[in-house]
Length: 407
Image (tube, rainbow, N blue to C red):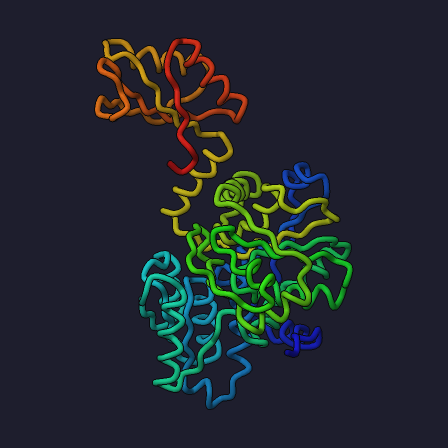
């Protein structure tokens, strides 16, 4: 299969120049300090529609004939591709229809409608929406705009790679979040054509990682199940177009945990002052999770999108703070007598930790007669402070169990 050429990516860049933003590449001092090499963030969360997807969608729809655009376009997406297609179609004068899973984040759903698309909610996962979109295309004649598996889409996404090389000419490593592979395929095609020695790494959520098994098998292999907060990269299988690019051009595929994704999102909020969705934080998570080995700097981590549901953001931030040992959730067993709760709170207060939540229960099945369990969540200054809190409680004679992250 032919790969996207540098000339095709450059043509897409010329086409997109009046349409998309050349998003900034900004230095991250905190990540540079943690990794020991200069780290920069390519901020596609600041792109129109809140992600890189407008690049590929516009390139693909612009490449249609007038007759094809007159029939309308149809897409399936958990949210970011939906918005990209809706805006691109509106700019190019085409009707757009989008199928989204029923659990698609409400802000992404609302934004897609605001860009002019007719939206249908179907199925529980992206593959269900894809099947409906393909059937709609066959029935109505609308042109199906695949979220990643088309050469025009890959060329459009590849303009991110052109900008990285232009903005960070001495880049040594590029990290790209990866679901179906359209973004990493395009970025790798551009970067490897211009600077063959640059290491390009695809980053997947470990609970939705189709690429390692597919590359090992020598062809796309579908996952039997997925479960990740990073809905933007929750794709069950690569496509033939992206597989050809990734298998030939990408140096390595790594996976990151849900804890690392949430910690990365919190770091982006706190230290980079950026709102980033979990999928968009995957490259940052790889830097935090220590899965990359020795790094050749400067490193450019692509922050692919910032379309996050505020309700999910609250949950992920709490998860991230717990994973970073900034929140500590404990279950403390105490005698069932007056003053026990006050004693626990006084002990915690004495360590300088801040109590956020407390619950008192006599109904837990593991309790002996005359015991009560206190569930307490406290804000701490980090891992060492957590040890101080737990140690103080145990020295006071309490039985203490720490809740796992996400419990």
